[in-house]
Length: 257
Image (tube, rainbow, N blue to C red; front, side, top):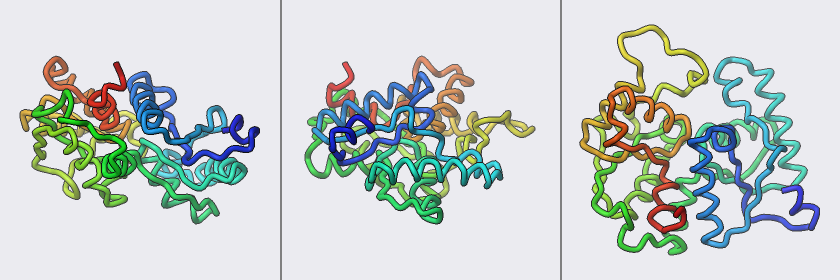
């Protein structure tokens, strides 16, 4: 972003990468595939690079409002300094925090989750996925992210993206507003699970595997980690794969070969 600003240029969108998209080896593959899609459709975008810091979501969910506001104000100063108007992110946690909680601190932006962004690209014909690509007829189930679904009422966008693949979409018994959390929300990602008879991600993975799907689709980096670990706990990683919707679209478009 700094390089563009130095040239007096303004991107159409700022891609907010997030911590998982920047540092988690598995989710960095999602970041690369989403960037390939942006390049493929010719959208002008930028990233903050080293200037992007945590949104403050984990601090706020863990009850540290002071730290959250410090982190949020730092980011707002950076975004406003570049005149950013539109932000796209693949992380529902970053999406929810910037969209819904930054305005109270003076940060007002159009914030788009990548599921909605991809849906729009498909609706506009910029991403065609002709014939469904490699996933035509494959049985896929979608796991709803809490911060995308219950917190922001986005249920259909990721499903419409998957529908473009002409796959055999199958719903888990608990889906949409009744979907079961993966166990990572509310800053739970960063601690051991509470004592109990079964980890939440194991129960959720059992539900997903029970659909007979060979692919579990997600639209959240933390859901992806929890569902992948749940699949491993059932020794099903050879027959059931977990993908982000951006990876599925990129692969169907032949962009990540």
